[in-house]
Image 1 (tube, one colour):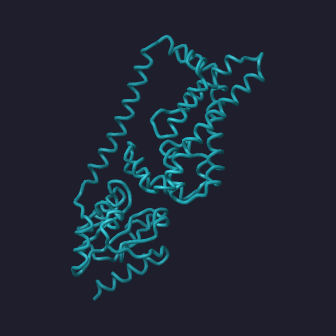
Image 2: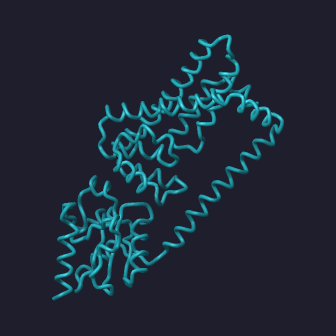
Amino acid sequence: MLRELIIQYGFPLVFLNVLLESLGLPVPAMPTLILTGAITALIGGHENVWAMRLSLFNVVLTAASSALLGDLLWFSLGRRYGRRVLGFLCNMSISRDTCVSRTSEVFGRFGVRVLTITKFIPGLSTLAIPVAGAMGVSFISFLFYDAIGAALWATVGVALGVLFADAVETILNVLDWFGFGAAIIGAIFLVIYVGIRWRHRATLRRRLRMPRLDAVQLDALLTQEPPPCIIDARRGLNRQSDPVRIPGAIVLDHGASVAQLDGLERSRKFVVYCDCPNEVSAALVAEKMKTEGYSHVFPLTGGLDAWRAAGFALEPLLLDEATRETVEKIHHQAAS
């Protein structure tokens, strides 16, 4: 059945499958590329080598163009709406609690060049595109690297189909023998995969379930003596794109982790904020601090965005000096 569908509707199927995947739907296109490449090679044989090569090139061109079309949409949305688009994508993701921070970390390390390989990395292929837009990557740079990545990804998929055409044909024969049962087996594996991912997400959220403070409560605490210590737990790339902080916040170096806070009074109140879904980065830091003996640690509900939306003060963030100055100030307060 698959063989007949690809023979009759190969190009439209490739275009639609790749477009849907690039738009974020869970319909992986690599198997379609491999199948199409294998069937094209098997049909072409050795008598029509040039015709076969032209057909394979057209498959690659179709897939790359479709991927680029979907990516252009997400890039434009990322430039226009920034982190709101990232929040929407993470809310739709099974791994939404960590997807933005992980993607931002990779993008911050390698820059726009990472777009040449993101389509090979599950979880990054969709999010890296709006991240590029939100980070202000130029349209020309985006188009150049994303086109290379799309063409490379499509070429690899089709080439794998050609190289393993005989094996693919054997698999197709087995699937034909199973008939409708093959679709049932595939659906079962998909359900198992989704179930494992959802279980992982639910376990993480249960683990990080702890008391939180909202922006109004934090503002009230700041009028007390001593005020709570505030921890900025955002990733470096996010701080660079939004270089402000809650006044007096300690910028946590994720490389140094909570060891950076050694010397502070562990019985004081600490409020940790981030800018990620469900405050997961802040909750992870709070969990780690509690294991280190800090007894009163609370994630800030809604993070920096909630503080900003409530109209409370922000101050510019000098990334090289923020942590040193703030820690010295808190040490001075504790000594006095």
